Length: 284
Image (cartoon, rainbow, N blue to C red; front, top):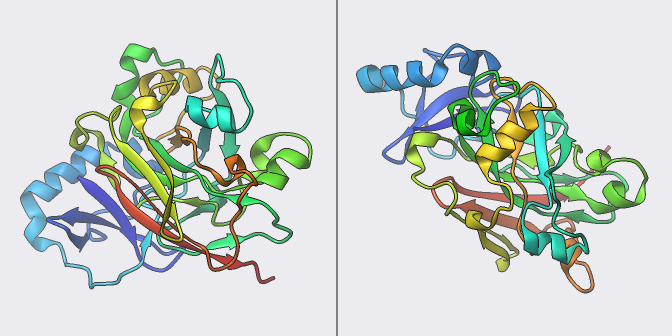
């Protein structure tokens, strides 16, 4: 299944993609949030979709899509998880996963504008595969980890490099600005993705390819990441683990290339759809 959330920002309602059409499921669920996943929502949705899909109102063309997951308790990101990206940043591939956090208030829709924050000098793009947690997970064994995965999303881990790398402390301050986590268009349940370790992943800037890779190149694979993260924090239903970006980010260009107002990013992952975000100036 392909789950969507639609409507005005902050007022999104749940929906479903069937035969490339969007349908309203707000009569059956409030949102695709922690409560939905914790209450076995995916299986309940499958049952409803099989028996009552004729009752779903079709959504009008052009409806706004929000992030397909209601605001999660955590957005956990994995740094330097493609060897080529580590090299382009001048870092060694890590021996253990690098973990940092992204503010849940950064979450936005897949076609929303990206706001370049006040004082931004070096805002950058990072296309990533995001994993959505389906049930509470703590101290999970790697062999059991996929039982806790609900599905996958396309994610753009927008990053302000001067905040991240030049302002002291952890990376988090360069990762959590508003609109720095465009997610979607869909949450695709794991049963629809035959081999999550072999998906094309790409991003274009103003029509020019800048990132082109495959999830086969992940250093740490999804079961290991779910298990690893769960050793340090309890994963709650609806939490997101973003698995890292391949080479081709602006920081890796010579000279570096950063986003400016009017720039357009288009990105996608096989089976998870495509997204488009335009950069705009912060207006306070």
